[in-house]
Length: 434
Image (cartoon, rainbow, N blue to C red; front, side, top):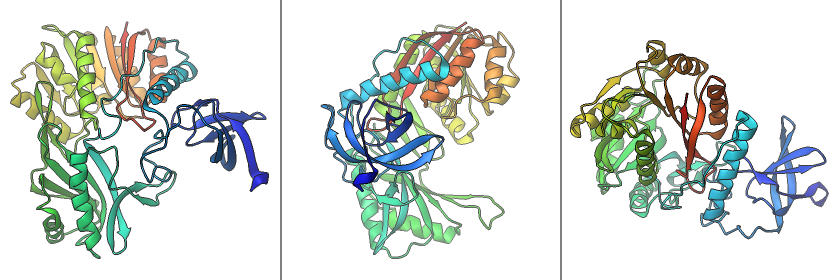
């Protein structure tokens, strides 16, 4: 073993949370380290000229190093930064964002400190587990980093205590059963921050209604659970998935002065308190006045666009997910927001049919893959005075900003939010102007 060890000093963290070092012209990547640390390194897989590996021993630890509180941190692929003090996590995330914007987008941007989460742990209001066989019954967990091997993690520390009680009850019942009525693949638990109600969403293999009802019966009396949903694979059913509901298929939550309905089939921010901060920041930046016309692409349930409409903007919500669009309509109706309209379209389809001069601003929160080439072309053709881009991935953000700036826009301001402490994820809001 000693012959295969290298002694290296970590230069920086890169996107994904791994440490980067260089040895004789070779780039080395390793998990669980901090810039400035000297470690002994065991080499692993080589990909595209990059040597990946693992820490054998930390020879010179960083003053920012702490003991990770999660017992499965070394195995689980969910978190990457638990070994780093929280203030330092924020600092390193800012550095990653600056480096990525410079390297990928060729951009020189003023990047302020990352806005922290009010809770470094216990912040998630939704979490998805894999369900796997664990004698004598079944267990909830996540995948081991870099593989599909399951790791038992029902007690995940990113989940608040009240939500962990619901999960623990489900886990205790799963552990009792040697056989379930249907092949269960995953479970998503969502909990309302404002009201404490929870929703269980199961994904299963092919199932009959009778099997779904039997699974529901095993968990129907879990305290604070207001509903369960089963989405069964369409295998053997012409490729069509099936869906059954017991009780509600939604929970309600409050964001500032708005009441939201969140259905099981919709995307929603997992860090709800920081989502409030993000929504307030956007309202401040847009400064919605009576008559300003805003197009929101990838609108989801309207967490960002509807607060603008509440304050006087004329907002068009565009969303391809029909469940999310139905929730957004419901939010507008429940909260008596009249200055908005809704379009069930993909972003590319909407941009293709929108005329130049139709809007004063475009708001968009695309998936981690960023804007498609068609969306970028459509945005540049619209010639909208202001763009607001919420990104979930620094690399695709840097790529898209580079293209938008080359197309005639300039970056006015930028702000990152630490929606997912203990992980490498970074969310960034950017304002651009013609």
